Structures are given as C-alpha cells and as structure tokens.
Image (cartoon, rainbow, N blue to C red):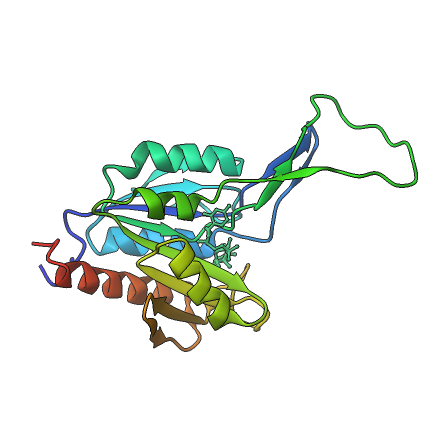
Length: 224
Ligand code: PMT
C-alpha cells in the first residue's frame, strides 16, 4: 500500500532529553522538548508502522495509539532500547542524550558549604554507537545537534556510530533544533549528502524522513 509505506514495520523512536541525577532534588539535563521525536513517532504511525516511543523528559503530550516507555537517565534509555532492539526494523534516535552522568549521585540533598564545589562526571555509553555495533537487519537513524562545523561532525558521527542515515540540525539557527515547532535538517548517509530540507514543521520533517527511510529499506529488499 503506497499510502502506508511502513506497514508491517516495527519502529522504535527515542525522544526528549535524558536526565542525570546529582541528588534527590537536582539533575543535569538539556533543552530537548521532545517535539522532534514525538513528531517522528506520530508520522511513523500514520505511515502504517507499529511504533514504540522511548522518551526522556519532554514538554509535549504523549501521542495517542503509540506504546510509550518513559525513562530518566541515559543508562535507563540504553536498557529500554536494547530490550526492544532485536524486534525492530527501524530505530530513530532523536533524543538528546546526556554524554556524562554524576560519578557518585548522592542519596541525600547535597548541602551548601564551600565557595567552590566540584562535581565529578563520568562518560555515559553511546546508545547509537552500541546499536550500530549490534545491528543485524535494523535500519538506524541518528541525529546530530551541532553548533559549528556541522557537516564535518555529522560525517564523523555517521561513520563512528555506523548509522544508516544521520540527520543534522544546526541548533544555533533560529527555527531549528531545540524547542521550536520547526526544524531545518540536512540528511547524510555514509557517502555524504542525501538531501537538505528547507525550514519545515517538525511534522513535515518527520514525514519526509520516514518516506526516505521507507525507500531505502525497500531498495535494500527488506520490504514487501
Ligand atoms: O526535542 P526537540 O526540542 O524537538 O529538539 C530536537 C533535537 C534538537 C533534540 C533533535 O533534533 C536532535 O538533534 N537530537 C539529537 C540530540 C543529540 O544528542 O545530538 P548529539 O549530536 O549529541 O548526538 C548524536 C546522536 O547520538 C543522537 O542521535 C543521540 O541520540 C545519540 N547519542 C548521543 C550520546 C549518547 N551517549 N548516546 C547516544 O545515543
């Protein structure tokens, strides 16, 4: 069915920002609203897929008719994604994932004391890279939120993380990136530029991206 190019496909989307606890009342997170990832989950459903949305902190309503798995930290997100990875056909990682977490989160509220304090952070595992290394049939799409040298970083990420496609957004451009209802994205595969989209609603970006993914999957012979 051409109107439902993702019929029969299982799609897992991550969205929102992960949250790293420092103590019971404080955490580290980022500006992700969840809008981009939620739009992708909704568009995947419209195009016929069975969708799971693994979501960190987000400020938009969870979409109807979609299995939603809420998570807090990057480690939680990794576990939720790995638990479901084998059954997926497509994984799209729109979440803004914390690269570091507190080395020793405190179980009591940290008291104010000296003029300066140092918080030690340790590196989180890279979820996208972990998936890239484990993939069998899965089509994996990463995002890259960049502030400078976008194309260079995007090409580095796609190769290092073994993604099938990478969606670059320059988060310094008005109307793109965190929190906005629109985005301006450029899509890459491992050989370079695939398409540069103009400013579009996140809903429209999501639809275009999924149609592109469906075409690539079909060309691979994995569909119908
Ligand atoms: O949620 P919105 O307000 O709508 O904003 C949308 C968005 C800006 C969050 C989204 O469009 C976006 O760019 N998401 C990716 C943000 C990000 O973490 O980018 P990154 O360049 O730091 O990471 C690259 C990729 O690796 C991402 O797919 C990310 O999910 C993944 N990653 C990163 C670190 C890590 N430890 N594990 C990961 O899987």
